[in-house]
Image (tube, rainbow, N blue to C red):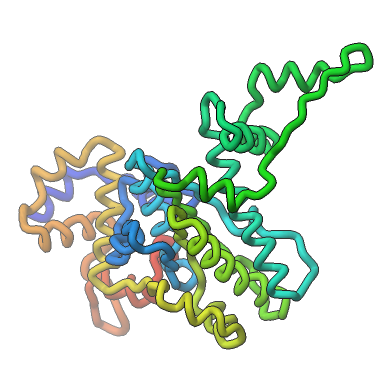
Length: 336
């Protein structure tokens, strides 16, 4: 009677496409994502400012993007942090070279310019030379709307009014950022998908390997800069075998793994998130068991048959079947 009572009272629309959320965490609406996001154990290390570089290593669908998004959300809550989130695809240099040193220099240039542009976009009134350079750089690259003065000066360059506004820009971003960030805000670069569409050819191997080298060099040169990155295990194995310098990055890598209990908790959080978004969670809690283990079982049975048929005349707990069929990957779990 107990089971029938609480299940009849808690309403779940099985046709609602948002029931389990988006299977791609980076594309999920912020409110929905935060209602169900589950923090893996390694989140603590990703939030530790003492760790200059942290790399999550996991296969496609295992939660790399979700972890990076969680870290970004938490880091942004602290005023002292400047958090810059981007994808490697939008940062990648356009090079035909297979010279790893050239790729490293270009990656460094891209990373340093990204930081400079983001800082410039957040500066209000600029008085010092460094501040003016940062603001002008951000304006030129579309990171910041041009000020009234800049707009007027740019439009007054005519034959009759020979006014020319000379933009100094950022000539040496590394030196400027060293000065600007010294004893200032911690700057966190969160960069996902460095190995997107990776093919095992020389150019791709150099491109990905040199990215990690560039991150190490920037972090060493500017102590206030921290990197949070992702890579797939198969890609890492390929590039590490060929590029000895990556042995120095191995110490910063964290493998993302999901246990049976984690998968159960993930499903339960999705159901809980659904109830929260539909303003029925508080009422549902009054009907559910106060014991956490029993409550998880109840929430799981709201959306899955419990136990499930498995083989001939056999049944297994729903969480075990889902864990097995999804091969321990959150994205595949949600797709199922």
